[in-house]
Length: 499
Image 1: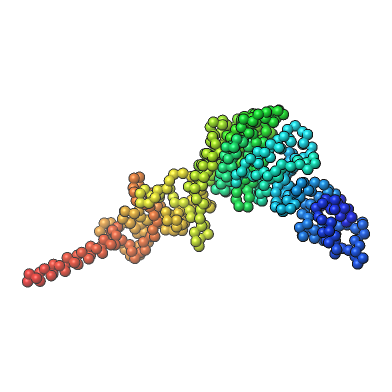
Image 2: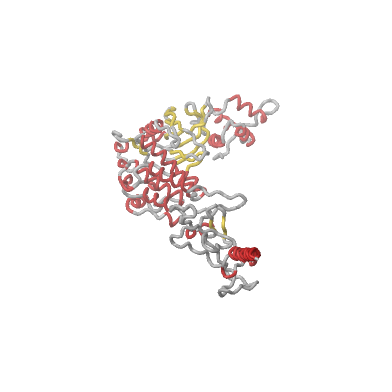
């Protein structure tokens, strides 16, 4: 909105000076506000809101452009072949705009170096080097740079426009991410970093805000402004005595001491800090002054990620600690190692699938009833907890995947052993259980003895009509009776044949 009231004459003058809209189109849009003689309202009249809405509705202006015009700003909307549409982000070193090619119409991102920075220290030289570094990288997980141009005193880089959100904004908006989601995003970032490292570039500013997630779920690394080339001669940071570069919350210890010592393993550390942010919602050392945070990176052990997220699998937690090691030699030595570790965990821990007709995912098989040979043994390793039941022990899953909840009958037998009816009062040997004997409470599920090769599974408790006398199976008595009858028939037939 405008900072002060603006008349229609003032708005039209600024609009025509901006070059955003062809004069003929402006006159056409003004037609509904002209009187019968073709005149416009008196010069002192305020800007009709319906006129502004019509300009935006037809796509001639964007809301951001209208806001700038109402503030009397008419310069800087057109840079070379590109028309600025809106501001995407701004910082101390640059501002980034969404722009449109004037003839081809495709969208790009324009990164503009502030005019006041052009003559300061190494900003312009670093800006040019960023464009060169980005342009030489061609990878699906790295945002590309297409051109480096200038318009008068304004220098700008033409970048790939990524429609989506950065991981810092996503986590801040939605809260800590799902473990699988965070692992996949960090994996993709590691793949992109590995490519950059192989091309001889160290990013030196990996953080959630520099990881852009597009609409297809692809992570792209942004901002090569601090990238350090291997074997770089006459480093800009040395030339201008800039010893510490990067973002304090994600800075590797060796980089905090001297940015010139950063290498690929420094990016791995920063990626470990990023993993912590995605899972917990804050950076590992997020409190204190700048100096205190830098000292924490150098001296304090990384925060226990399980304190904030107890459900984080062991494999992910262990990888996080390795990435956050103080000495570079103790970390994964390449970003590819990180990508491979996360890829292996994601492959071995598939996302839970919902069963047809049920509102909850299948739950885990209890460890104490895992197979010893009668079925596939669960491999040791991390387990992704899916849903509140798994964390509290509210349910389990059998090997077939069918859910067994607390309301289901407890297991009453183990394959290979006779099924014992525990619903009747124990009787003396030789006695017959009385009909209607009240059922005793069902005991807890039996534990598979060590070394037993039978698989445990749940079965329904036998009904009263199927109770087994003397603790022996009904089938035994049926076969026993049939054998007695058959023996009697054979004996009678034999005696008759002798008579």
